[in-house]
Length: 319
Image 1: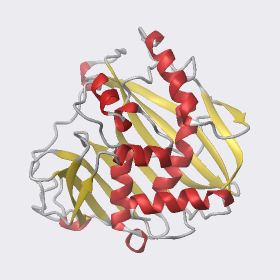
Image 2 (image 1 turned 30 degrees about the horizontal axis):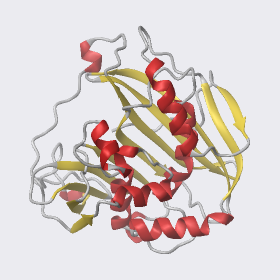
Image 3 (image 1 turned 60 degrees about the horizontal axis):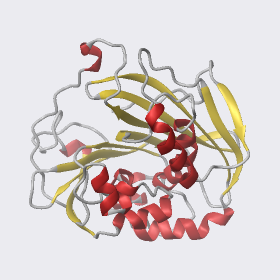
Image 4 (image 1 turned 30 degrees about the vertical axis):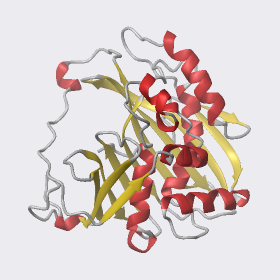
């Protein structure tokens, strides 16, 4: 799983202040238009720059937060869950990816995994500083992977940090096959479900309306087919955030780490079975419950109901 970094952008990075958080719609249009020309040859050089927006107000986010809570199943609260903080910070990370000097194409970028930590509660009314940058481009057997780091500060104190790992498929970069190799995934058998989600055809449009991520693979059957999917697919972060809500604030606490790794996409409509278990009941190196890990927190998994098709796996660990 992706490791979190030392707070703050690398020392070699410049910081560019933006007046406000950008809107995703314009960023996606820019990113798609620029993707055709982004086919790096040789070393992948990321922009040594972090974007930062100060004084991001949250007092006006009450309606947005309530809509998020209703859709994802989070209880009503003035505390912003990690999934909502991801939604707030995602446009700034996207702005980094659509820069002209960001070498990887936004078109076809695949979200592999995510690791986030809430280090102090963020509440409605807090004034935030949000920053984001890209780092650690490296070989992958199917292309190049890169980390997008996002941070949220309250009163100068780091409150939230996330590392989202994306894959640019088909892009080549220098590196040995050993560097690009992945550990083989363990054989997996679905555990007993603790929940079942009935996801309608409009799930992607509903989450897109709240998150701002209107990528057509999530919102349109025709758009999804253009990218090789038979139907629209659910946002990965929708499934991860819904699992986080299933764990719930009473069990995860005010500060926690939240991870997710994505496997097969969730086609819409679909029925997804979900298992949430104590980490110390899940076996080391597998998820079939064959032996305890001694770990803290919770492990969650989702798979296609009635099939052994795994969609996602993650953890929620109180800090």
